Length: 384
Image 1 (cartoon, rainbow, N blue to C red):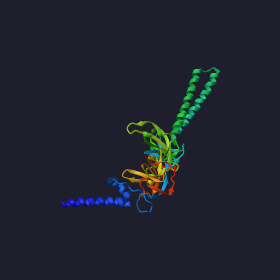
Image 2 (cartoon, rainbow, N blue to C red; image 1 turned 60 degrees about the vertical axis):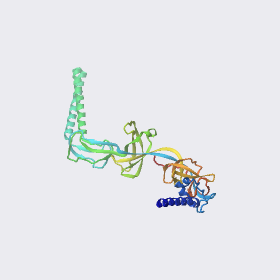
Image 3 (cartoon, rainbow, N blue to C red; image 1 turned 180 degrees about the vertical axis):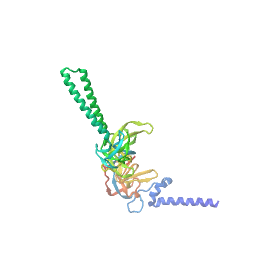
Image 4 (tube, one colour; image 1 turned 45 degrees about the horizontal axis):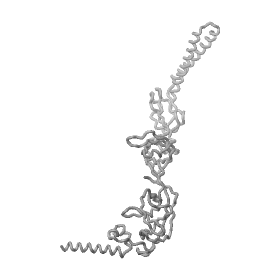
């Protein structure tokens, strides 16, 4: 019984102390209001006192530093990861069997279109080419002779037709021999960089054997996916930022090259193909890249980060209107290094308190001692 009595008396003593603290110690007002003590006790929070007065006294004037409210644009950003591939890539293969007698490139070298990649042994093809030339020459003489006889009426048109067909057949044989000879010389179909070679002089290769991989990586194509809700905001030529996952500090600028015409039903995303220049040859095909697309959003009030205050009800700012402090609730939409974009009942003509907020209460009279302007045309970049 004595213990219960002691607990009751102790609780009453604590309650009386809090009430006395709330009424007679104005300096405690900010903390007591945030804790909801004034509302619990049914008391009104005191208004601000003059700066330097050490507390809150009714009718006092608070000296504050304010900042102008600006306007900023919320930029929605889409981050995606895609694989890069060279603008052009060709695997050079042999169309015929033969022994490599000469290699015109080395691993990692750059070649121009038409440059020699590999030369196969071609002695048999050269002999066939000379034989075909002799056959054509002989067939040409037969045609000339029969045409002379035909003009004199000593041979029939059928005989003339036969020698002309033989001549044409000889020409086709010569063209085939020339093609067989040309296939022994393997050249670069595009300009680009040669990958690691798996053949050497003296190796024997067969039809469709890979000799070299040539990639034109003067620019890279990156494929990635974008949520379908951004479909109407995508367009060919739209700028994007690209950073290799291995080098996130190096940002490159590119553009959208093409858009797919079908939305994937499983992921509800659209396949997008972008392109980024690679003038310094720092990027490689097969690398993983992070792609950033920015979309312009709504224009919102922009305030100094120091103006944002917090209470049990959420974020708010102190706006100065007609010489008095007005508490304005805000919803933070985007944080930047030097500004915060908010949804709030604020206009570009408003001013918000950034220093002296500890001495403010709704309706308190304020004296502006300094004003820090806020840029009204900034367009920060952030993400949603």
